[in-house]
Image 1 (cartoon, rainbow, N blue to C red):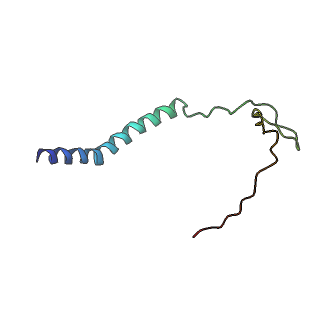
Image 2 (spheres, one colour; image 1 turned 90 degrees about the vertical axis):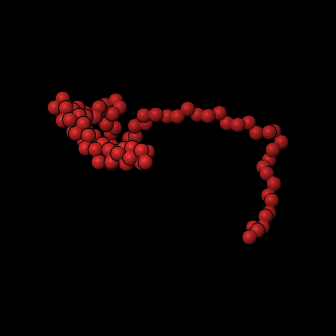
Image 3 (cartoon, rainbow, N blue to C red; image 1 turned 120 degrees about the vertical axis):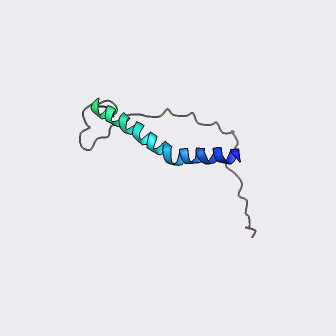
Length: 86
């Protein structure tokens, strides 16, 4: 019986009291950030001049991976016909 009483009290606390407490705490935090000028998005990347019309500016070129070496006498695979089994 004691377990159920504690379980019900915790359930009601989480269901009804916790949202009220979180709402009060977060509203205070948001007000403080708005007063201090918070939530500012920093500028993205280097701010150079925009490319001329018709030109493309590339910021990142991935490194080229070395090609795999193929065996010397290899001229392709062998075709294998198959039937679909239902």
